[in-house]
Length: 185
Image 1: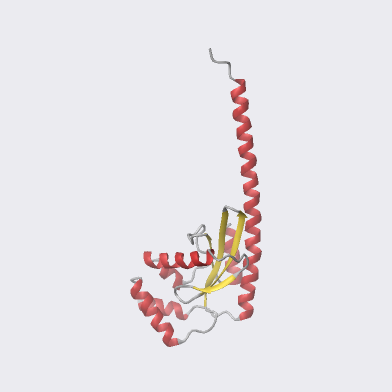
Image 2: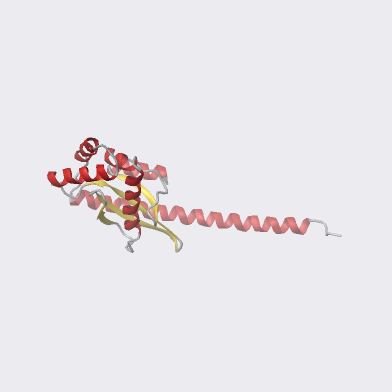
């Protein structure tokens, strides 16, 4: 999954991560921007990101859904369903849905820097470099997320079927081994 995720992140020029339903990363972040790298460098910042991903992951909709994360950035998530018990999310983000208000951005970066023990200057500089995606670009992000989530589902189902076949083979092997042993006296 990681190489596919990395390639998609490069193509659509956003950050991507695959998470479990509770928001914990199953992959490493692809195409991580400087702002998110700074946030993730702080234990409390990383936990805030996981909480945002958890909120996305718990949405019932299957198709891409856009929200704003704890840091004011836009994120979209496509649900990946391999089986009833195996659900995860492909999360794309690290952009603004509209240009941020400069005063609000300054206040937010000041708050985030203090809350997560980060350099306010570095965080503000990184926030200023984040892209703004228009509606058309956001729509493309959603389309790509959906396509890749469906591909991940197929990969997961194939892997699950393969593992089931291996388990059946192992069970048959054990049965044959048991039958070929001499009787105990």
